[in-house]
Length: 475
Image 1: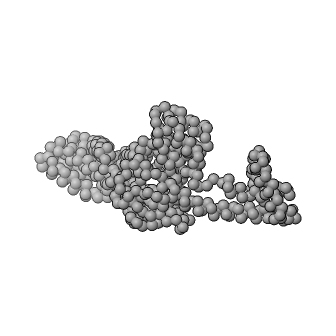
Image 2 (image 1 turned 180 degrees about the horizontal axis):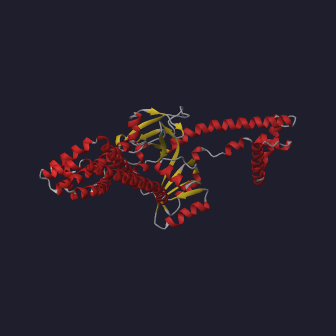
Image 3 (image 1 turned 135 degrees about the vertical axis):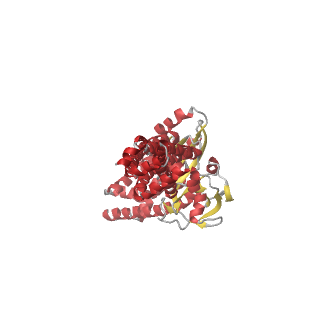
């Protein structure tokens, strides 16, 4: 048998380019199928590890899938923020057992800064490699990949940039201090920077304060413009008089105060539309413009999302519907949205899988043509082998061996190529896929490839078996 393998290898090596082309086509199809196997395994692994038993995610209105991707998998932009007062009412719901807040918005060198509680690390069973958990605002615990790729270590300080890009507007006035580094866990926390929610509030309250000053200055300029148009009817003495009258109304008649607030909103609407004030409106707006700043929602009153855990199964039926219908927030189920995502991706994966099998089919036809031509070109050599004592079965075995060598070589090169490609894909790591389920499917693929190699060599082998050596040598 060893002699047959040596002869088969020698004959294939003699036709180097033809053999290499057959193997390459086969390897491309195998590599695509192997990558699909790994992708499916990756999605299933991410689904199980990163869902972490989260029953519901509550966030701003928008796409439910986007809410899950941004708040659970951290691979998309958030849908917005939700007010803290609604969150507190949500936490008091008798159907809710536990909640974990999520505050997003900044990053450091492309890694997201997540404001949350220490419960978030417990949710993913994180273990400390070095240091300790955060205990106060502006302290941070970083994931294993964050530490590896940024070089941050215990005691280092860093600043965040607005958004999730590597470069952007930096919050230079607020520095985070690294207090701990997490062990590699193979879940989403490997790529996160975790800090108390208050850290995110502190960073953005500064920017919000500057924004309010700019808005107040803009409002002041608008007001001065209207004062000039109305011949300075709102001088300082009139302003004091109007303020005194409004304060009296606030103390004497609560309904009039509410009416003044409504008027203020109407005046603000006029500013946004570029409409002019009357003299009375200019006086009123001049006094009440400060309330515009007071009415704005402070960043410290908002979070990005709330991870919710049910107290009992009944909550899954009534709670999401109640949130979506009766609040300004939306509720999304991670299980439902991830199944929807996988089904959407499954269409693309099935298409790629079909393409890969078409490539393998073409390569098997190429192997068949190659082996048939190889047999026709070496028919006299085969006849001489028969005269030298080789049986028909050994000649058939020689052709089958050539088909198997080509197919198995294509499988081996394709598998190696898929692993090399996988290593360099973003966010994917080879270490997480030494999984028996992946190997099992790849071994099944090997069996298919071997069968294709045998099938491609079938007709040349039949012709070799039926070949009449006396007639061949007499030609």
